[in-house]
Image (cartoon, rainbow, N blue to C red; front, top):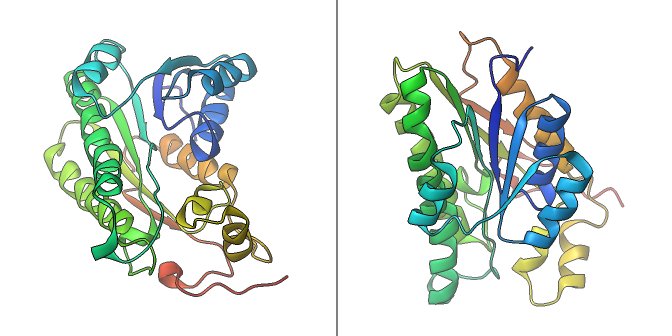
Length: 247
């Protein structure tokens, strides 16, 4: 496994959690890593730690994304940025929450593709890694609109491979189950209750687990495209609806 063919990587949603873990591992591997998120302060801390290039950017604004990322000649794009809003029933989801999920999870990913994929195809080399979710593959109560956006990413990955057929650009979809990043706390009004419900007593995945999976698919031989990888905790059943509590 080697990343020697790649020089520059872009990671969105990089200020914390899975995104920050991916940035750390790519920096250790010697790549020039652009860490993209909206929080300039958190990115500055990550840059001081890792040597990454911090870029405070709202990926929902296409013109800004094209201007900031279009000239970087990125070999790797990791579409990790994802909005999470309070959970509930589909027909009760607030319009602002729907817009936030659609803007970040779908439009943001498409904007980053628009900025990077043309250069990849022109050079005949590149790798797009999209972070999906088991919520987009199987029904999961409490987060229907989020699941819809991740289902869209699943379809995007499949069609993107068709669009890039013969170009030399690889596409991988990483589909995690429950990862202890703190994002689940946004699903409930009481964050402490969310911690008890989603984390206490459960042996969840950790951000580094997903980062290691990303490094695996990137480091695979050029002839090999890991197009889809689902990663769930050992105690979490298919689809994520059942999770054995050990505590």
